[in-house]
Amino acid sequence: MADNVLKVSNHDPDSKFDCETLKKILSANDIQSEIAQIKGEWLIKVDCPSLNVIIEANNRLIGQFEDQSYYLVFKLIDKPFPNLNPSENKLCTVADKVSSRAPFPSKGMDNNEEPPEIAAKTICVGNVPEKMDLENLELFFQNKKKGGGKMEKRPTRNPQTDDVEITFVEEKTAKCLVEKSPMTYNNCTLTITMKKPFTAEKVAEKKSEEDSLTYVRKTILVHDVSANISLEELDLYFQNPKKSKGGKITNIENCGKKGIKITFASPEIADSVLGKDDHWLKGNSLKVKRYIIPKMDDTNILISDIRDDVHPDSLEDFLKVDIELNVNTLKMIQPGVWLVNCKNKIDFEKVKSNLKESNRKFISDTYPKAKQLELTNKIIVRNIPENFSVDHLENYFRTPLHPDHRHFLKMLPGKRCIVTFNDYNIASQWSKVKHEKFDCDLYHDYNDDEDEDETYMDINISSDFKLQFIMNYKCVFEKELKDYGYFVWSESQGKSLKIMFSQSIKEEKIKGKVNELLNTIIEVELIIPPNIYPILKETYHQESDAVYVGFDDNNHKVYILSFNKTLAEDNKNKF
Image 1 (cartoon, rainbow, N blue to C red):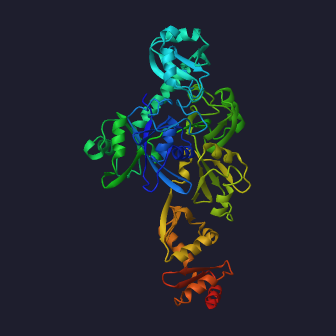
Image 2: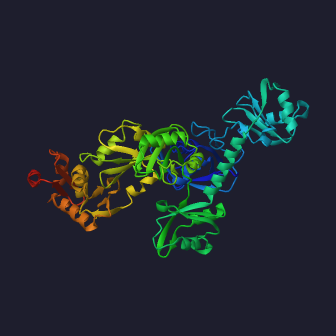
Image 3: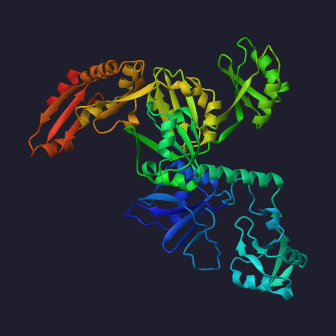
C-alpha cells in the first residue's frame, strides 16, 4: 500500500512556519504524523484516521500560536514518504511524534510487527545509544565474519520500542545473528531478537484498512443536488472528462440527505474531479467533496418490525436469549422501532443472522430487522423550557462536563435543539446525564425527520446600532419568536439577522412578526457638533441596561435605543 503522503503549503504570505509550529497545528487537530522537509517542501505522512480528519476539514487547517495565524493547505500526492534515517542530515527536519498516540503503522497495528515473510528476515537490535551512527552500525551488521550479510532495508529506529530494525535479503542471516545475541559493538552490548510477525487476524485487519483507504481515495460525495437532476444525469456528467474531468464510474448511490456517493475506477479520476474549481449541471452548482467512511457505533443498534403490543421485558428476554445480545437499555423510538444499547461490542452480522432465524410470532409478524448506526457526536435536546435562552443552553453544555471541548448548538422549532461536539465520547457522556429541565438523547441518523422541514431567512436591519441593541436583548426576541422559529445568532452579522423556521409556517408570517418586534424599538438620532462630540463620548456614562447608546464617529451622531419611549427621551435630554 502506498504511503498517505501530503504536501503542506502555507497560504498566509505574512507568516512562515517551522517544524515545531507544524507539529502544534497537527497536534491541536489530533492528527498523527511524520514530518519531513525536502528541497524546501514540507511533507507529512499520516494514518487513515488522520487522513479522514484532514479530508473532513476540506484539506485546510487554521492555527494560531504566539499571536501568529497560519492557514495551511494539504494536497495528497502520489509519492512514497522518504526513509527517515536520523544519522543522515539530508533532511532538514524529522518529527518523531505529533501526538501521544503511536503514529504508525495504521490504527490496530503494532510497530513491532511485520507480515510473516518480512518478519522472518528482520532483526530488532536493542540497547543502541541514541547518538550512535547508524551508518557504522550498518557496516557492522554487513560484516560476514560477524555473521551478517546483505541488507534489503537499511537500519531504522522504531520510535515505539527505540530498537533499531534491520531487514536482510536472506532469512538465515537474521537467524544467525539472533543466535549470536548478545553482541558487543563500540563498547555497547546489543541484544538481538526477531521481529514479531502479524497474526492472521491482524493481516486481515491491515488488508481491510488498505481496501478502505483505496475506496476513500476514489470515492466522492456530491451534495445539495437539485431535485430536477437524476442519478443517470449525474452518472453521465461525471463520466465526461471534458465537462467534469471525470472518468469511468464503478458505482453511484443515493445516500439521502448526505448526498450522492460516486466511486470511480481509480483514485486519480477522483482527484481530477475534486481538483476542478466548480461543477455545473442543468444550471445548478454541484458541491463535491471526498467521501469519508463513517465510523460505526458498536454498542447501539436499531431493531425494527417489532409488534406494537410487545412488552419491553419480553423484548429484552428475546434479545438476550435468542439473539445473544448483552442488553444494557431499551428505548422505543417509534411504534415498532427500538434502540438497543449493549454492554459490550455488537457482532452485527451475527445479530442479523440470529434475527432471520428467529420465529417468535409474539415479537414480530415476520422477523425483526437490524440497522447498524453511525457513531454520532451529536445529541438532541427536547422539551426545552420557555425561560431557557440560547445563551442558557450554550453555558449549560459548556459546563460542567469537559469545558475545554468545543460544541455547536443548532436550534430547532418545537422547543428542541441539536448540540454537536468535537468528540464522540463527550456526546455519549452528555446523553447519559440526567437533566432536570429537558430530555436528551444521542442524535442518530434515524432522527433525520427531526429537522427535515427547517429553512432559513435573512432579515435586513436598518442600522448596526439596532442590530447591536437586538443582540443585547436576545432573550426578549427569542421569547417573542419561540412559536415561529429561532434566531441563529452565530450567523447574524453586518446588518442581517438569520432566522431558522419550519416550512409549515409561511415566510410572510415570520417577516411580519419580526418587523412587529423591530417596530417596538424606539430609536432617537442626535447630531452633535464636531467640537463637542469627543467630549460627550468620553464623559457619557450608561445608567440603565434598558437603554443602548451608540456613537457614530464618522458622522458625529448619537443613537439612543430602547423599548421604553420615556427612557429614550430622558437619555436624549442628557445630551
